[in-house]
Image (tube, rainbow, N blue to C red; front, top):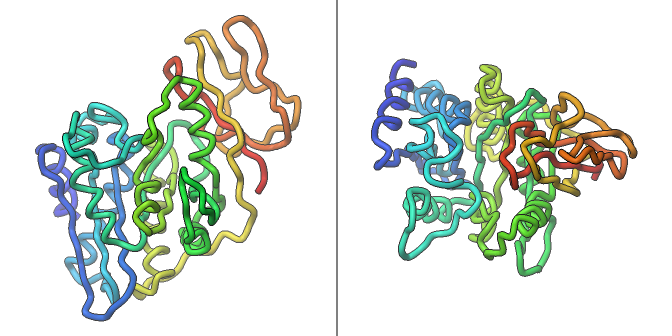
Amino acid sequence: MDGGNELIRRAAANPQVLQWHTWASLTPGPSLVILGAVHGNETCGAHAIVRAIDDLQHGRLLLRRGRLTLVPIANPLAFGTNTREGERNLNRRFVPRAEPQDYEDRITRQLAPLLATHDALLDLHSFHTPGDPFAMVGPRNNQGTREPFKRAQEEGELARALGVNQVVEGWLDVYDSAAHARGDTQDDEGIGTNEYMRSQGGYAVTIECGQHEDPAAIRVAERAIRGALALLGMADVPAPSRFAGRAARLKDVFLRESLADELAGDWHSFDVVKAGDLIARRADGSELRAPYDGSVLFPHPEADVGQEWFYLAEPS
């Protein structure tokens, strides 16, 4: 695997060049693109992808049909500094611009056309606090104006095939609430890789593989890659166990209003709460209690003021 490590070193050393690898079988089939390190400090996807590249190059993994594109480091600038973003969050305004204004705009101008030529996207991420891995899907089929979609069944099948034991839905609606609370009213605010993929007629799943520094997150990402390939019939690989439970639907988001705001416990994603349970306290002493039975998601005790502090979800 030294070749994979060298690939990572080269990508981090030259943030002005994006690297991806594509394999195209002569047997027709679906097209899948897999992204790692959209956020630079979420490295498990990059390591899992370079292992898959090495397996493909040395014949340990064979593409049977379709087309597979692997992008180990989608944001080299952020990856090289081990930070979430380079000049801004790549996954909050992933919309090509005729005149790019920052580094992430220039990344988007290259990646967006690549995504648009594929049927499906698997985006590999990780999170701040300890917790179980989970997959995230988009809206149900609809003809609305914000995120019209008609491939929810395929997207759900992909999410359930990745070897994780929880699926979350409804992110964009709740994020829109947070954006408006901050005063962000741009139409493209909140549009990430998955939302862009859906806007181009494809479907997309994000998998949150575990805590950033946990080595097990790499194994979760590797299992997800093979789960996607198995589901789509693109490679003869063992399929992980499918998730057959209920999804969790994001319902509310709470922003941190002061650095003196404090969570009331060491919350992890999917920790269960009952209506009335104390979750956090504001700087003025006021309490934030669960308004319904559900679970905490994405707790970020070190969130900046005005940023998402934690989410609440209900069974779906």
